[in-house]
Amino acid sequence: MEPKKIYRWKKLGLIIKPDTSKFWSKTHCMIPTPMDLGNGLYKIFYSGRDELNRSHIGFSIIDLSKNYKIIDESNDPVLSPGELGCFDDNGVTPSCVVKLNDREIALYYIGWNPGSTVRMHIYGGLAISTDNGKNFKRWSKAPIIERTKCDPYLNTAPWIVRDNKNFRIFYVSGKEWLNKNTPRYNIKTAISSDGKAWQRDGQIAIDFLNDQENALARPYVLKENGLWKMWFAYKGDNYKLSYAESEDGISWKRFDNYSGIETSSEGFDSEMIEYASVVNFNSKSYMFYNGNNYGFDGIGLAVSE
Image (cartoon, rainbow, N blue to C red; front, side, top):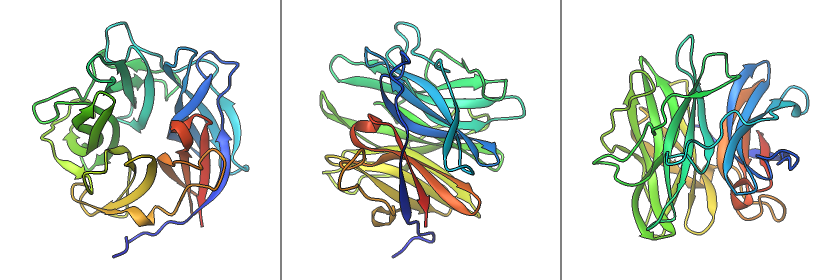
């Protein structure tokens, strides 16, 4: 069985790299998160890491109409780690940018917090911009997807799609910890009327294929012409990229062999490919993605063939 849409990708190389002259960008450009500025311009949010390995969110603006040139970038982070004791006091990583209404642009993000009995705690947070994405302020010091009865472990990497009058969230949700360093997590979905408070009942969107699969990460979802499309990363040892489709956004079919992109024989994506985001411009699709060591070297770009 084949998906309704088949993608094949041509790699264009590493386009965004850490800028070690900036305190927040010593390593990594993790989880490329696009905001469409129009006319082929995309603001790509990502997280770089400082000398203490804490993540901060910055951006680069890419012009797809001019050979993928970087035309601007942030000198300072748009969001940094939260207050001591909060869920994001050890780092923040972008996950989704979406327009909530005529006044608010939402930056959904991953908040990092070191654990004790387990390696880490990660939850989904929300920051709001009222100046068209120039500045963001936390909507709450608490996460928007905390532990619940149906989601008792980690809950993070929120991706949001407008679904008629509601918003639909796809998020990474922990199922268990195999040991202190190894969580298992799949992808769930829920709805909201305002994009802030979520009605969660543990609905699974993408589940594990087998017991050897430990992680289903960073859902990136587009709803186009009545078809829901999702790119997500999955792994036993190293991340690979998968593609899935749905008619209703709730029940999904995985097509692991149809991601259209594989690791390279050498270079920044020779071991793993993950955290993809896909945008459309001039009848082509473009994929921003991370490679080895979760984006240590930066962000790659590929174009549909």
